[in-house]
Amino acid sequence: MATIAGGTGAPHARIMGVGAYRPTRLVPNSEVVDAIDSSDEWIQQRSGIKTRRWAGPEESVQMMSVEASRIAIERAGLDVGQIDCVVVATVSHLLQTPAVATAVAHELGTDGAAAFDISAACSGFCHGIALASDIVRAGSARHVLVVGVERLTDILDLTDRGTAFIFADGAGAAVVGPSDTPGIGPVVWGSDGEQFDLIRQREDWRDVVGTDTQPGSGVMPHLTMQGNPVFRWASFAMAKIGQQALDSAGVSLDELDVFVPHQANMRIIDAMARSMKLPASVKIARDVADQGNSSAASVPLALDRMMAEGEAKSGDTALLIAFGAGLSYAAQVVTVP
Ligand code: COA
Image (cartoon, rainbow, N blue to C red; front, side, top):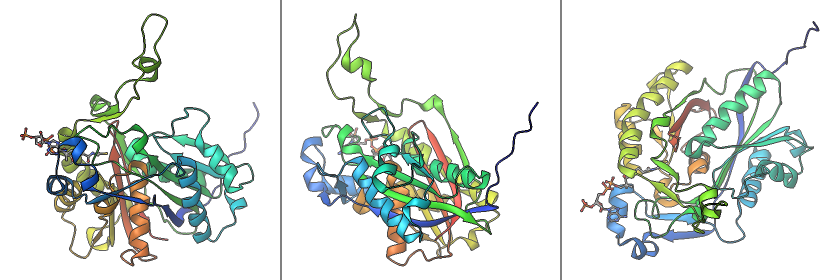
C-alpha cells in the first residue's frame, strides 16, 4: 500500500481583512407597512428595525460578493492571485448550479481558485469561517476568501407580515490566512432538524414547476418563518452557545472586547447580551437597526461597520455567533484584523 503524503498547513489561522457591500437603496418602515397592515412603531418595538437595505436590479448576488471581496482582499494586503479558495455562503443565489463562488472567483481574477457555495442560511458566514480556518491549517489552501451574501428580496413575499419587514440584502467578506498565533478559536456549531420547518422556502421547485402527474403552482416559493418559536429559541439557546465558544477559546468575559451576533432582531441581541451577562465594556453590534436582517451577510456587515466606526479595533477579541434556518448555528472567537 502506498504512503499518502499528508497536508502541511499553517500552525494557526486568522482573519486578515474584512469588506462589505451595502445596497444603495435604504427602505424605511413607512415603505413596507401598508402591504402588511403594520406600523413603524410596531416594527421598531418588536424588532428594532428602522430601515433596511434592499438591492436594486444591478446589485446581484455576484456583483455584491465581488465588491465586498475586493475590499477584503485589499485590506488583507494581498493580490487577488494569492486567494486559492473561495467559499460563498448564501441561500438566495437563484441559479441552483453552478455555484456562484466560481463566477465570483473568476470575476475577481483569481488564478482558478477552488470555489464552492455553502447553504447554512443565517449561520452561513460563521460556518464559512470555521471551514476556512480548518482549510488553512490543513494546508488545502493558504488564503481563503469567505463571502456571506444575500438578495433575500427576491424570495420575500412583501405581503407576509412575519417576514417582509425583517429581511434585507447585502454582502460581507473576509480573507482567512495563516498565522503564527491562534486568531480563530474552535467553532461551536450544530443543528436542530426537528425545527426544520420554522424558517423555510415555502415549497420546493417541483411543486412550482409541476410534474407529469401534478400541475405546478407557478408561484415563486417565498421564505416563510414562524417568528415566535424562532425568537424563543434564539433568545435562550444561543446565549449558551456563545458561552461555549468563549470557553472553547479559553477567553473569559472580561477579556472579550466585541460581540457580533447575527443581526436578526434587536430584542434577540439584547436578550443574548443579558443572558450571557456581558460586561458593560463589551461593544455590541447593532447594525440591524439600519440594515435589517441580511442573513449570511449580517455578521460580516456588522463587524465591518464596528471596525469602520472604531468600536472594534485591530487586535480586539470578538465573539461571532450566527443562527437561523435549519435550525443551524455556529459561533467562534476571533481576533479583529
Ligand atoms: N405588524 C403588526 N402586527 C403584527 C405583525 C406585523 N408585521 N405581525 C404580527 N402582528 C401581530 C399579530 O397579529 C399578533 O396580534 P394579536 O396579539 O392581536 O394576536 C401580535 O402582533 C403578536 O404576534 P406574534 O407573531 O406573536 O409576534 P412576535 O412578538 O413573535 O413578533 C416577530 C414577531 C417576527 C418580530 C418575532 O417573532 C421575531 O422577531 N422572531 C424572530 C425572527 C427572527 O429574528 N428571525 C431571524 C432568525 S434568522
